[in-house]
Structures are given as structure tokens and as C-alpha cells.
Length: 102
Image 1 (cartoon, rainbow, N blue to C red):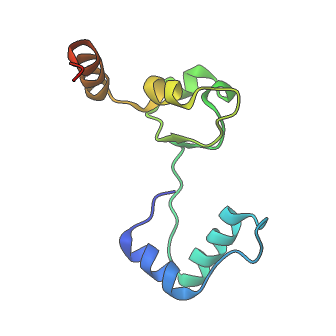
Image 2 (image 1 turned 30 degrees about the vertical axis):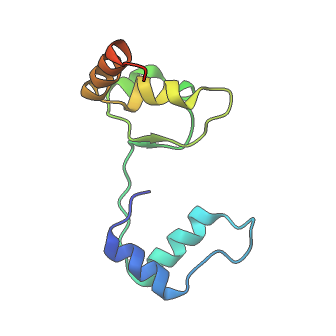
């Protein structure tokens, strides 16, 4: 989820919060946003599962923003494969090849 600064301030000042430690936080947050009159926009680029849980063609046809679950996978490898842009990858390779140890 991505929130504007105004939305965060409204949520924090509203007293809205989860009613128990095991409450479904995403649903409670949705109810809070609705109560506060804050609109929610869905993006298919936020993924609820791991990359392996989606057809590769679906992911290749979009620019994923995030993946939610990280069991039985390497989250750093997921970041490098699906989320890191090519400029970040180039800089990382450059730093690794030319890094000097002090």
C-alpha cells in the first residue's frame, strides 16, 4: 500500500486501528479509509503472492511494484529479477567489480 502524507495524518489522528493483534489489518485499514472518506485506488502491480505464484506472462506484461509473500524464495533475488530497474542493476554490478577494500 502507498499512502499520501495527508492520508497518513488523517489515519493517525482518527484513532482508527486494529481491534486485536490478530485482526485482518488490511480489512480494518480499508474500513478506516472508507470511514474517513479517503479513496482507494487498486493497482494490479501490487502482488499478494510470490512471483512463482503467477504466470510469468502476466508479470512480464507489467512493471511489478511489490510482492507480499516471501517464503521458500530469496527476497533479494526477487528484487533483483522483478523490481530493480536496469540502472540500479548497472550501478550494483559496477560497484561490485570496482569496489576497493579499505
